[in-house]
Length: 228
Ligand code: APR
Image 1 (cartoon, rainbow, N blue to C red):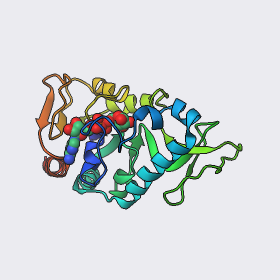
Image 2 (image 1 turned 135 degrees about the horizontal axis):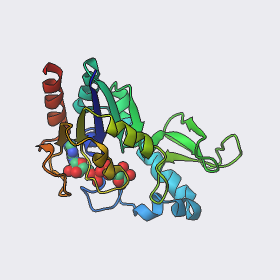
Image 3 (image 1 turned 90 degrees about the vertical axis):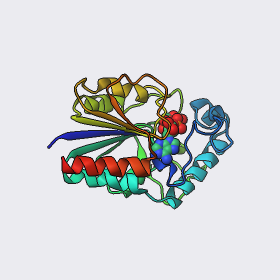
């Protein structure tokens, strides 16, 4: 079975009602990134950070996968598919994809603020101050904040090296190390990018550019790949 590696960003969930980051004004739902998505923010005002992610978790739970998420799951009929996502929502899993690597964590789980390897499922949308891990420290969202290591990056690099077909969907490629993953895909591998506004960073001429929204571009490409 050929291996398809799909790297996704916020754009794939946009049509499920979850906003992208850089299509708006650089603020996340009106919040300054520095105040809600850094270890310093957690030190200064953990309650605000917790509230911010509680709202995002609620939005995620209320959202449904769209035809792009479902199409990627369908691709598993013929290919060995790994989805590497920068998204913290669980729409790929709910859309049926069975092999998903979350580079930036997943909002439906909590994490010990003492030991990042201790993570737990969250029941419902709210993670409260006072809820503790087994070591007795406050639980925080299981997401990678700006300035933190990306523990899954070397796994993701290895996966990209193994790709026979590579698909990039809905990412501005503005954030490293995730953006650098495209450099680990072998030169001769067919590469597709699906985005209504193809990012201006240099992709080289090896990418086939599909200038469409995810819900149009992904199902069309999947149909094509299923018949070849
Ligand atoms: N279908 C496909 N792509 C879309 C759609 C759509 N309907 N709508 C917007 N896009 C594209 C935009 O054109 C843009 O290229 O999705 C991309 C979204 O880019 P960003 O908002 O920068 O999101 P992303 O690349 O996922 O951000 C990476 O940065 O803020 C951090 O940790 C956060 O994981 C995130 C990372």
